[in-house]
Image (tube, rainbow, N blue to C red):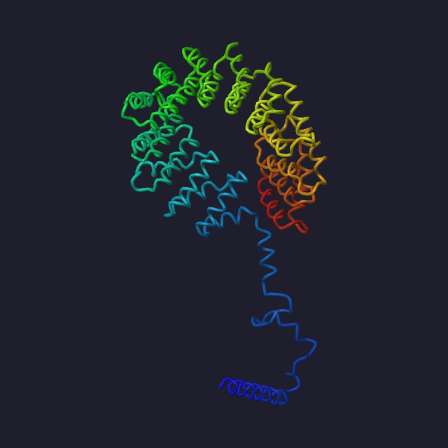
Amino acid sequence: MRLVVERGSRRRAAMVGLLVGVATLWLPAQQLPDQESVPQQSEEDPFAVPETGEELGIEQQDEDQQLRAPIDDWRDTLMYGIDSEVITLLETLLEQREDRLHQEIVDLYDSSRNPRLQRRILDFFNEMRWDGAETQALRVLSEPREHPNDLLLSAVRYVSAAVESPAHETLQALHGVADSPQMMLAETAIRAIGLRGGEDDIGPLLNRLNDRRTPSALRAAVVLALGELRAVDAVDELIQISSNTSEDGTVRRYAADSLGKIGDPRAIDTLSALVSSDDTLLRAYAVNGIGHFEGEEVERVLTNALRDSFWRVRVSALQGIARHNMTDAIAAVIFRAERDPEVPVRSQAFETLSALDDRRARTFLQDFVQNERNSEALRISALQKMLEADAAAHAAVIEKLIDAEYDKPQSRILDQIGRILSTSETTVPNRIYDRLLHHPNFVIQIYGVRAAGRHGLSGLRARVSEMAEEPYHQAVRRTARDALERM
């Protein structure tokens, strides 16, 4: 049967061809198609077939797309994108520290019924430290039973991290969440009260602390909150807790930490004794606590703690040394930066040296990051701490590093320099950004363009304008057009 069908199809095809040929013979001469003009169709013919290799309108559409600045695409995604696309976009905006679309994101939050998206939005504002979504967070906190726990947690964490002076209603709502039977919710809310509350919140927290029915996890959160509130009225109770070997270990450690934050001198003797505890974590918290006080005895304790066998104790000591600008301890800090067996300790040593106001510290860091015999990972760690502390102060070293790394393929150090400078709140001389703008790698170019736009560096406008056109990479052109709008 199939052979018959195929034979019949061929017969019909032959018949159609014959009829077309006959019809062509009868066409008037002026209607015969001109062989040379066949590819050239009338521009007004809506059914004209494009030339080979072209698709109608595609080139122009691509060019129009390239002309759009990234922020235009981002706005479109916020307006029309599916939730998963918006969530991906939020990660991009966070990475670039993009803050021009906050109101559009708030509007999207208000119109969305997807708690997962709402949670991601609050997390985004949390990381950006933007307090303009307090109203949205309050709506969640005020009706805890109407929202999933993960959205509630995000709302609490947002207020805790981003809203420096919450409204009275927001604090009251936090107290309500602190009564939740969900332990993690209650703990997080109590800590948020400590960070954002005031004197009026100390009394209720002390009542919780003295209520022996309060679970240990909540007692620990209350102890931390009292420290954040600098609750002098809680000092005697906290001294007793930290010294009580029968007390829960976590609660004791947090009590030592809070005694340091409160800063009442009555706690010094207790903390000094805890530095010798057999509990390694308690020693770390005690060193951190005593690091909030001043005096020769405190400095002696911190310096000796750099020799402790537990790495977290050494980290706490380094933090205390930075807090007090203990330049007399620079030699010991440099020793830890060069030779400590634990990476977190070396990283903290770099950070401490970056914070110390001393030429020896700066010289060590600058020499360390330029020495190619050192581990690349450690060089990057030191570089990050230096530039995050004060990029402008290390401009000369940045230039030397750029010179050394400029022609290396896939240089991680050059990438880190570009990444940090593109998101930093401080500026360096324009010539440094200009080096990034002229680098052959388009990723490095983008870092330079972002920095120029972020800081409105009009002196680089001509170069950025060039990069907004061909033959630069499409991503570079799009970023350049966005930067020009901000310059």
